[in-house]
Amino acid sequence: QSSIQQQRNPMSTEECTVCRKPLNNRSTRHYHEHCRQPELKPFKCNRCERTFASKSHLAFHAETHLERRLPCPDCDKTYKHRRDLDLHRRCEHKTTSTTPGEETIRCGKCSKQFPSQQALERHRKS
Figure 1 (cartoon, rainbow, N blue to C red):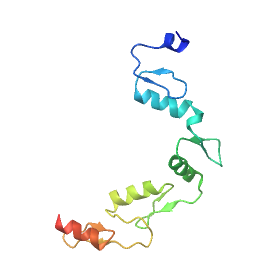
Figure 2: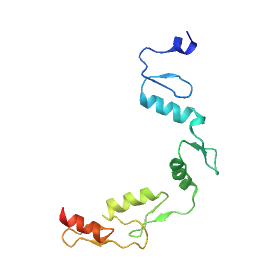
Figure 3: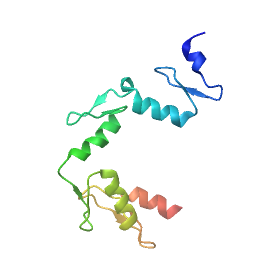
Figure 4: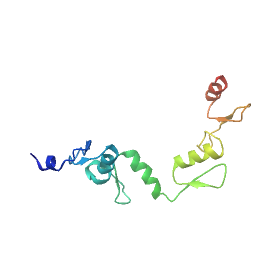
């Protein structure tokens, strides 16, 4: 019997796909694999030592190194991340357009804004 099998907790339901360590549940395994297994994080930031499991996580992290901030075209707030600006604009300004200069079309009945005439038409039909 291997040493890993001897150490195995009978209550364990998951195991690390790299080192086969027994873990209690899926979230514990996910944390272990993404935080403790460098082989699973091949995408390295070229500005610091952090590594990431996916290109999208690295791209999101890379925005933290930017000195520029994304201004809200509707108020004085600025954001480091596009998704934070998008969320702010949807919640605070009730707009679906986040690209500077991109026009939106407003519904005449409810004042909701849409990024295209087609989107407005779908809204009117619903």
